[in-house]
Length: 305
Image (tube, rainbow, N blue to C red):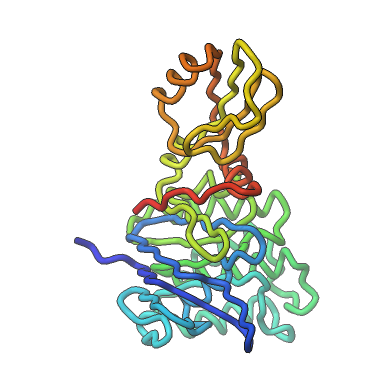
């Protein structure tokens, strides 16, 4: 059996003195090679902290993270050379010209693919002769992505990589990611708030909620599991109307709108019979599923492996 690229076991991370702020509360993930994992969560849910613990930029409070066989806090030089990382806020050398930063970074990597870098710079219209300091936020983010991709890393971690990009640059970035994932040896973890982008490139999704993994599994499986039902009964429904596995339920007279986890047709048939109701099943996109999962009082979905 092929070992996971990233193995996270009971990971916890807290900040500050008493009372400490617990950001991660026992996270478990096992990410096989070739995975494109989209990491979703509300602000403050721990997405960036999870990525930084995986890269050895933050030391876990408890638990462990193994990356390409190494403990994340003690990564060897060989493993570091196989990693790529784009942080939320790109930081580089403001006094250098863009081409100088690229050349400086390339010197650290014997596997540097200058042809790929030249193509990306052209796609994203990076001004090679301009100094880095005055670049726009979007240009800095594009440069950070180029620097992370230049040595063709085996594991690429991206923290809100398109946050500063305009729609055209975002499209080019997604095109590049789709090209990268053609390589079955390449694994990508990225956090984003733009769920439509994630749906285009990710094959798995991990959703963080209150510092824990609320769902981890195939994206298509998640869409198959979570549905919205519109139930139009013959008579008024009670305000206490409940459905097993409901994430959210709204009742207005004889009509109920319910978002459910673990949907199957037997549930719909049961509702039709029990309430003499017309039941319509609606598919949800990833953004709608995310909203339903974070509605007040919504239970956590069962984590899959």
